Length: 221
Ligand SMILES: O=C(O)CNC(=O)c1n[nH]c2ccccc2c1=O
Ligand SMILES: [Fe+2]
Image 1 (cartoon, rainbow, N blue to C red):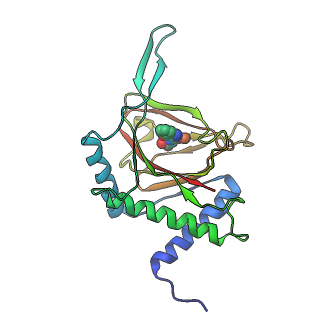
Image 2: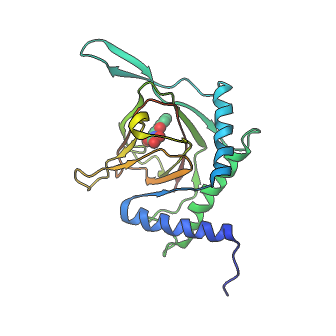
Image 3: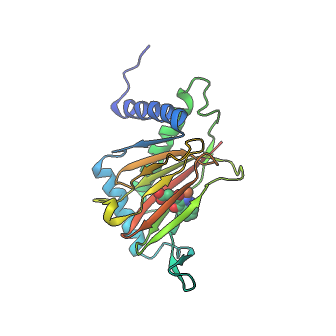
């Protein structure tokens, strides 16, 4: 019996189908216009308010070889962790529940009830990250190199009018087995990216020259 799903369920089903297909085929999946402009802006405003309230921890210091000897240290990413139930964060909370809905639906939809042979059963809190520009970047790394349980990385981007040539901040993924092919993902507003968190997807954030915001969730199996 095909109950008439409402259009949100329809949308979640549609996105989940794409996620399953692309994760199986490429180990990653990009979805644009994830929340729609209005809700996306509501999430962005909450993040901007938190940032101006100074809630972000000082970014880790990374050395930046300005020259051979003079090591210039620059601020890397600045982060804060949220569970989305905090007051002033109800839109971030809504984003989190939408991502949960897609992941849980995808989990149910794929044939043996497992996406990539994982049975997702939890996730981290949301990590809100800001790259403050001036060349802040993140060196090539694997999110989960040593089986800490995280299997899917979900990154929601908040950057309006982002011009990759001027502003940098490209996410470059070096998928295992793609030889010298890379996946270049621009951190565009209302875009969400999913990828396997393990050694299949080494990636880097290239130097950003404008303040760059993203919200990351890691799903456990
Ligand atoms: O923003 C992006 O496009 C990708 N971002 C990352 O890969 C990334 N990965 N791992 C982290 C751990 C701690 C703090 C920030 C990060 C971080 O931005
Ligand atoms: Fe990462």
